[in-house]
Length: 178
Image (cartoon, rainbow, N blue to C red; front, side):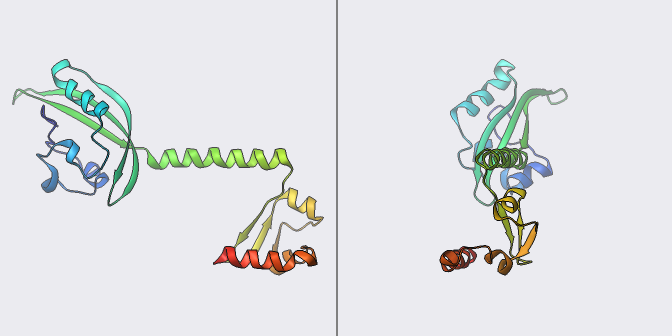
């Protein structure tokens, strides 16, 4: 980007991230890119200081919403560069999309909290595979129910439900599948 924060050029990954192309965005303010909530005072202030103050920053985290793509978590770094032949200063902007890695880390943490909660409370769990119509039982649910099967059919599983609770359990399953 130039001193006025207008996009001079980008690579293919940049255009892909913002679901655009060079003809649509080159020459426009960086804040006019397809993302909303992209123009924050903090990011603008940092970018405006890069050239006059030789300020640089690394891995500034910015959450943005890109209408055609959705929510993204970006790490933004910027550094002043000088094009010697043209005697022109510009800002090298590096944008890294870390959305997927953050979501994966959050999922791992959530799974670990769930595992700990079920372990500490002594709860058993089971998982229904809709495609195979099979239920996969945890070791704790096998212990609670007094069974040795790791997997069974829905019909086999319902045999362990008390007759007074069978209608409620069947309706609950049916409602969950809708």
